[in-house]
Image (cartoon, rainbow, N blue to C red; front, top):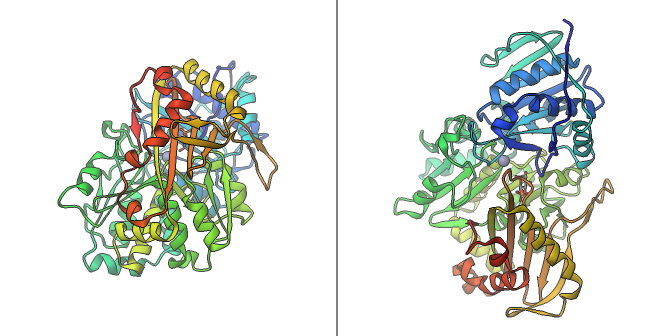
Length: 544
Ligand code: G6P
Ligand code: ZN
């Protein structure tokens, strides 16, 4: 079948951000928008003739139509095969697992992660490489460059393929294999954890709830938690993926996972609660009346990972994004292993994982994962927590208190100022950046600045350099402040202010309220950056 060549011209702004290209769903549905970007991916890869790709997404609105468009384009571009999750569904960690397990050449993930979905929400496309992880900047830059010179795309004039039935079909000369989206990932998870121990704990009355937020993880969580681990039906809440996530905001944080939050902080709280995001790579962990900060979760998981069979041999290293608290550093030091501090974005962990320099990675943005895939993995984090609880048989609160007694507590909060004026946000950052060299030794409120820099990172494996990755200010009082602009928003700018302070006294650590314990750091941030005046906001939209 002869491919159809469609003339096109560049559409401005097709620059992949922290995690692929994100835009309003209506923008993606507009003429040539998706096609231009997808063809640019194929072209930037040097063509996809004869290659095998994986395709799937988080089930959001426009995903099925986009899958059909991409399959026709892949066939027209000469791909040998595309493996697709049934109904176009694959969570992000599952897509990574499928790419790796089937040794595919790469994959396209259709997701805007935790951004709301629907016709009035967001959509996104991300390219992952053969190792299973997000494309590094060398590739995303090439894709962006191609979007600026594109003149044509290729497609096939055929009906949409049926993605609802598991099996094999052909499209032009290309094979389309529609697979069960869950099995490969669930099997991989089962190989890492002691399912017998977790099953035993649940059988003895341990109670849990998982909020899938009507997003991609529902079918995965039902299969793993209910079918394989024997948790009662209904353990997974909001389990059915919906194109608009039921009108919710599929971001697992205290503000957005309110059903679960209310349950866990109420009188009938189960022992353990967790939630995941739109595409299943994020996680939030809760105990009875307790919120586990993602930075603490990373540190606790790293300190206890050896209790799970997949990590019994110990960890090679830990990696965290720069704004993630320094709690993990203290664990790495105690274990005598490497600690890597990388820019925000899971893509920066890929080379470290490939080279065996890190086993566990985590980010304050509710992401944790390991070298089993090359994406963060929400369900993986839940299972590692459950495995640890099944071995230690103490509560989430007790695990945290024990951890803080041993390492101290890096009490932590992140304040987000969403959809603020882009120019004002950039001015705030630039003005502060210009003053960094003069800050050490000066006072910011009650605190003394010890060091200040604009975070730059040289990848120890690839040598790639990333600059301007966030302003980092360390205070003499064992506290730290980080400011950066989000790379995932689709409206205006989002300023993120990350604050932490170490509490060494276990009694103080056990009961500290972050917003109170961090009041001097919050004041220092205001004194240094003038956030209220510059954003015109009285306070943050979200505090995590
Ligand atoms: C995505 C990426 C993460 C990153 C997060 C925060 O979820 O996969 O690796 O930490 O975005 O990005 P932002 O730029 O919005 O702070
Ligand atoms: Zn996500």
